[in-house]
Image (cartoon, rainbow, N blue to C red; front, side, top):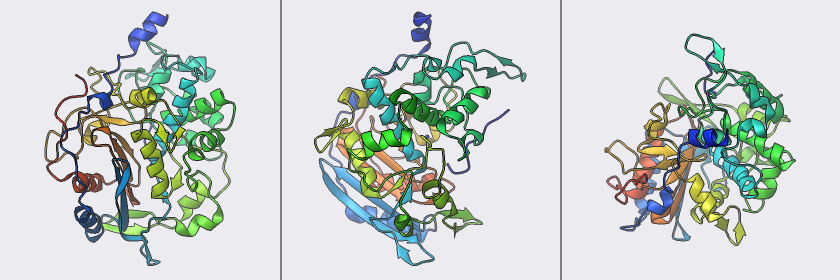
Length: 414
């Protein structure tokens, strides 16, 4: 019984022994050397080339460094057929860039002592007490150890990415029950596989907080950070500002209608996903990214403690964990709590540019953000191209850093 990623769419002693020791925080190892200087013309050219090459109908990028905006630019169209240019106030679907927001929500509750990262998940969500692992011979057996909360934070729980539990008629409680009732695809803690785990995180947030997940995020993240136009639910008057989705077919980008947008953000639904569903303008997401760069605080509002941000931005994958799904395609990275974490310098010219200690994630329509503590820099890249196109990420990073940038020397594991 295999599960697939959705098309659009990232005893006490024994328990402690089963969880790998965390590496030293990547941020503490990111020793700043030469200052990265933002070249506006170079980024402008990169965005324009993305459109000219037919890989994007429109794209925009926003870069902050040393406490100030260093770049904003856009190229092409938010809606090419309507002649509507990509502008700063365009609203985009960020898909899996929702996941770090969910992780921040859950870690706020961790700071309050509501759970431990090495708690068995079933301690808080009892439906996971009876999970079974699907073996290679097709039989089911109990896992060698329980799923820990740590596992749903780092995609090591044994889940795949099953669409059925994410049906809009399910609420998060029903979604979680369906996930718990399906066989695990591997032993908890034995491999990294991108999964529905962040939607389970959302269920855990609402169970621990005693309020609906969407309400919790609105009150504790979006409103305090003044991300006023970001949400799972949007007022009808914002629909004309939504960027259209473009799907590559036979080498051409074909515009989709707004049916998916209406379903995700405007139609009544029971399910608020933790792993996707947020939409908003680029400036809103930059406020979230700046908060992370500032170690949990922005404009006098503290969202997380500095130590919690560092914990999330630490590689938590044991080096012996060799099976890592598509994660190696992101470069020399491990994985923390809802972020990929760069653990070594780029090893080849084909890898994305960046600095050791950065943490990041992206979305199914090729959006991207990253936080680079070594250079006091954070960047948000917006585009709506499917299927996911990693060449866009390579190009925007090369434009921000320069094509030969390797970052500070060192390895965050040491």
